[in-house]
Amino acid sequence: MENLIDVLGRESTEYEALLQLSQRKTPIIAGGDLAELQKITDEEQELVSRIHNLDRQRAGVTADIADVLNRDVKELKLPNLITMLSARPAEQQALAEAHDRLQAAVRGLKRINEQNSELLNSALEMVEFEMNLLQAAKTAPETANYNRGAYNAGDTMGVIDHGFDAKQ
Image 1 (spheres, one colour):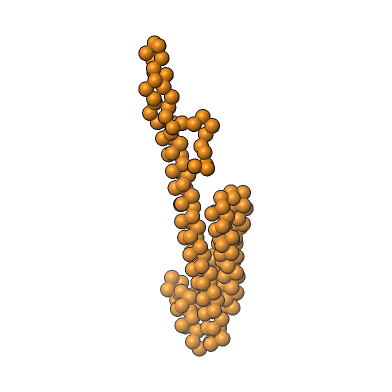
Image 2: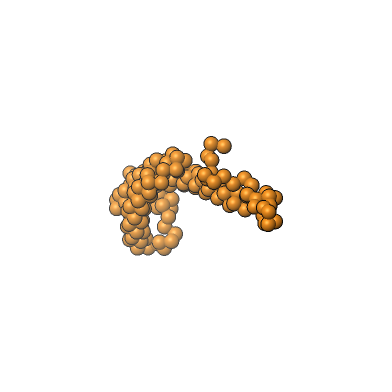
């Protein structure tokens, strides 16, 4: 049981670090700083790798506990374990605290990730809008100006040779 509490504690610490990175990422996404976003993404990948390793350790410890208790590992969830430890209040309390800490970190991470996802979607929609605007300007109708040979000499309406004016 001590191994499980230890692994859950370390996993919670890693999730909390991932939560802090995600919180740092929010203003960077809003500001559009791609270089800093790449750095944070690299740090996140390292944390996710460590979390994955801890998750495998937790699964192994849980399987060992299931063998000792002669239970099916699929039925042996943390709330069930906490309930089963009623005869050992110190371990029950430690496991409940580790479980609550992990849940709080995961809930916070989910909330921040949803917020960051919305920001990224908004940024993507803005880029698509600007691309459509530029494409529409290139396919704008031409003026009806003709030269002496009755060839169309008109310019495309709305197109400025020096590119997109962001001040408008």
